[in-house]
Length: 494
Ligand SMILES: *[C@@H]1O[C@H](CO)[C@@H](O)[C@H](O)[C@H]1NC(C)=O
Ligand SMILES: *[C@@H]1O[C@H](CO)[C@@H](O)[C@H](O)[C@H]1NC(C)=O
Ligand SMILES: *[C@@H]1O[C@H](CO)[C@@H](O)[C@H](O)[C@H]1NC(C)=O
Ligand SMILES: *[C@@H]1O[C@H](CO)[C@@H](O)[C@H](O)[C@H]1NC(C)=O
Image 1 (cartoon, protein in one colour):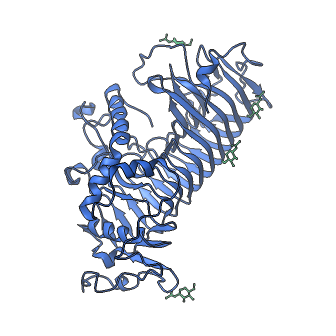
Image 2 (image 1 turned 45 degrees about the horizontal axis):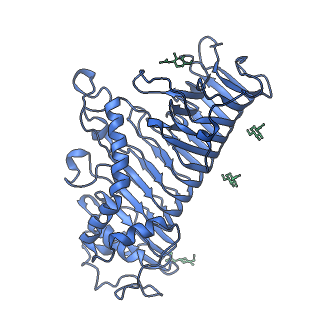
């Protein structure tokens, strides 16, 4: 994501701390609204620490092994006005158990609050193995901020075939609901979020808040709290699949994964307008073993952003644009340690974007970014097609510091297409004290989309090789390795 002011930034940091610090409390607080107080807070922290699935204690009411769908007696009376689809929730003869939210009282008319029905359906689906929570097609379900929390039985599928909609902006957001997030999936293992439907964030009223860039009176940006919810967040979960859905108009990040391991994202369509602030498509942090495939993302900020603590990320066949490109970072803020390794991006198209492929770090961080490969990326009218920025700063007044996140083993291969001449297509601004090392350039050929060639590639303290001649030519890449890259213990990651 890009930040738009120091105040705003401080806010973000506070939010992160609050999120991490109080998440368990939030969940437990929500939990007791609709279930009995089964979990004690000590138990939650134990489970949160364990990546392994913990079976919930057997519940006499509903978790039988053959898992019958909820009987009509338990469900509220059918609304005679509801569409006939209500009685045809899917192929229930072959699926082991489907928990259709309509059977739990969801109305799906786009204005009734269906949150309670989703919670009730979740509670039952969670306890049955390989169950499906179904939000059927031809309905529009409005639900408020909800934490779908586990642990659940493995194989749970949250299937959205209809529309699932967030309340329409801050005025409709229930007081007391989290302003950081709308749907949260928490403490789950082996879970799928899929469907043929649309998840609608109704982001416009959030983007228009007077605290958002140039949305105040006369194009100003007013200070003050500016919280906007991420649309879908996965937290402390493992073995996740997210596929097939259309996700649009998020107030802030569309999807965010933190503290997860084993994530497959496939065939998503994410879309928000070009000028929607901070609407990153997919953001991951402290998350390992991630595959992002066959997806199309158009938004107002980073298409995909990779934060600290990520490793083994494979991105293939993704189209971005308009967007701010695929970004590693920002890393090392407030002198923090950041470790990112083994990231591959292949066969991507980036169009009409403010950046192409980017690594950005703050001055003063520690840790390293290593083993990064960008291969076969087509650029269409992109500013800053290839950029390393180790002087990332929001206020233009950041001091140069003596440490930095160390970058090495970064390759750019087969990167072709056109750039927007307002900025040079290749820019390697490495830290003064900690050089970037082993940058490989191979078949990087970039031409102006329109206008004059910008024959002004920039490198500072960047070491590496060109396997083929780069277009535009860069002669600023330094040969070999620097004598020292500073205090090496600062840059170790484990
Ligand atoms: C359910 O699926 C089975 C096998 O895929 C198929 O034979 C059957 O016709 C389906 N039933 C309905 C009601 O769609
Ligand atoms: C790098 O990540 C890929 C997944 O993207 C994984 O298959 C591979 O084993 C990782 N390599 C190392 C050295 O960890
Ligand atoms: C920081 O270092 C860079 C590279 O040497 C230099 O261009 C820039 O002016 C410095 N900034 C400050 C604020 O000293
Ligand atoms: C340079 O980086 C490449 C990966 O881009 C790696 O395969 C190679 O071993 C590195 N070379 C050195 C000397 O570290």
